[in-house]
Amino acid sequence: MKNCLGMINLSENDGAFGVLCQNRPTSMLPFAGRYRVIDFMLSNMVNSGINNIGVFTGNKVRSVMDHLGSGQPWDLDRKINGLFLFTPTYDYTSINAKVGDLDLFFQNKSFVKNAKQEHLFFAKSYMLANIDLSQAYEDYIASGADIAIVYKKVSDVKNRFIGCDKINFSEAGEFVSIGHNLGMEEDFNLSLEMYFMKKTVYFDLLFDSVEKGNANYLKQAILNNLGKYKVHTIEYKGYVSCINSIRNYFDANMAILNPEISNELFFEHGHIFTKVKDEPSTHYMKNAKVKNSFIANGCQIDGYVENSIIFRGVKIEKGCIVRNSIIMQKTHIDENVHLNYTILDKRTTINQGVTLIGDPSLPYIGGKKAVISKEGNL
Image (cartoon, rainbow, N blue to C red):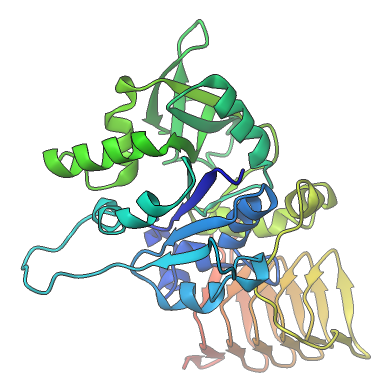
């Protein structure tokens, strides 16, 4: 896929995550003990042979730049091609705020123009999958299409994909349109918001939308012009999890406790890479007891942990009971604490004797660096 330029667009709606995304975008949500959500799409691209990738960061820039850096963990710190980060720019002479991501793509059009690749691959970060993009790319090239869309047939009994895009086909199986999933159908074709596109088509869409002013977002520009181009669809049959709400984020983390899902998600078409942080092995102390949990390195466990995701450097003191919870990096849980269905952000402190109990559909959430005691949050 050396003739394909990767584009990851982080203009994603993170309003449903509350304090978890107060200072970070959806792409930077910690996942599975040591990863970030964006690691999966980046790794998919690299494992499939894409070595020139542009990341359009959106407004919450700091955590994106801190995590991605030079791109070294993904072998993207190169002299030719590699990883490029594009942050929003502001026109201080204008009183009108820019809405959407299309202006950011237009401002950085030279990146795509100067790239040697003739085809583009666009993706968001919040569709978690381990997908062989090289096979999808070959399918797209063989079809001779201008645009190819990757989708998956899903049965959404629990309404996990409300608000996502759905692909509509005719009775003959031909692509008709892309709509918005309102939960009216249990079985439908879920768009993974992954698009292959010819570079020439991209510039046609970009310039036409800017001149006419009929789109603020790149996806909107694509949807407005689907009728002008030959569109091909590519079915993906593997595991997909959509991180677009707290409930889905919680469930996606819990799902990796299933060995079949974790093996597919982390190893099926290549390993998932992330920023390296050297930590010692986890120390299981005298009173430690762990069942069906994912424990990262650098932890100290002296309590009871069950069905939980424990990130790096977490300390769980004696007498603690942690069930069905996500405990992020460097959190300290003092003695005799009881947690069930909770999500604790990084560097949270839970003082002695506290009990926090949430619900599977709405876990209790502790914000970053919060101090929670019996007297209340500090």
